[in-house]
Image (cartoon, rainbow, N blue to C red):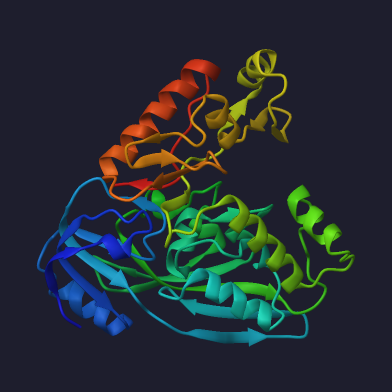
Length: 337
């Protein structure tokens, strides 16, 4: 464990932005984490996971701690369920594949989401009809001020759409060190309602899909729509799908009757942000090295040497145009730093 100064973070964020950390250290155990927190060289801390849900717009005059805690453990199980604990530094997709290989159900729709296990509850990650909270049992987090470990239950995490307590009142106060999931061992509650998943299963004439079949379908969909960060810098979906009230929805539908939507309740409707961005004319457009992906307008990309500020400027321009055209404001899903 070595604290480095003026460390480039280019390889530690999926956008590939070349910003520097004033101080940097990677920790492999909770003991190491407590040690560096007790001797931190800067009062400003920045906790780094997989670097997949952030946009760096500036150098970080802070002590950056990369959470590299590893390990997967079966805590308990019975005939129908298993409780699996994964350390925060485990790669999310690798963990999902571990569960599928052991026939543990519940996470297969979340295959190929970039990032690490430890940051998954912060964002309440989700895809194809499934959210992290559906299988979340608890997480253990280290309180930065006291170095005490605390267990957060599902209720304590206050999960919402792409939101949790860790993005609000607990922000900056805790470091998640492990997450425990409640998964099925039999009678898996599969979610294959999304048309894209159904289409792939039908194409392969799979009527009773396994967890592996569903995972492979999701991976195929994601690869067809989303660029590989190792090839083209990105952070997946840059914006949240906006949820609007009934009045806003009615006005929107009058102007755009062809637009897709999802009814959440009689008074709440979700509009696909990708459709809004594409309708505003940004899909596939490039502004220097900052751009919008040609296959999925929800994804902003770094074509090589874009700065974080250039990508953020593009994001703000998209927000402005979408608001002017539709009356709907789209919020970033990534953390802009």
